[in-house]
Length: 153
Image 1 (cartoon, rainbow, N blue to C red):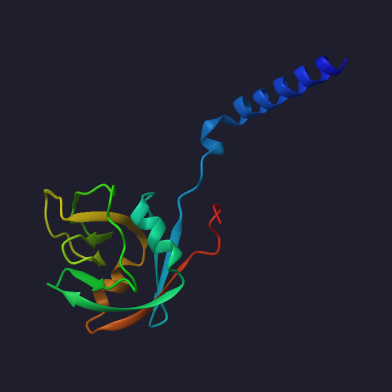
Image 2: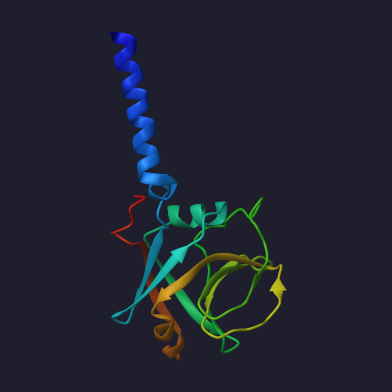
């Protein structure tokens, strides 16, 4: 009787997993919120070791400056290890990145290129609010935090 019950239990768990499917068992993407001047930018983050290190620093305040009329950049409060982090991305509008040679991060608010740049590491992609970044004409301070409604917290 005990063996039959365990068999039914295992079959039930396996059946439930199949019924829900693999997609329902996966983690939802982590999102962050960048807040400044009563504006918000929502970013869907990648899953890599650089992102995980960055998320451990949050919540935090960051000072941003404009660079080349195409990106807003800032410094990490502490260095991030780039060992085994995938490199290379196209500098497209809406991408959050690390510029490996300088060790800083930022957001492209204009597309900067059409080919893969191996000095860039993708951190995420802006889902909403990119225009708020491009409209900032001066340096600004922003609070970055993990979105409260992240299912993976």
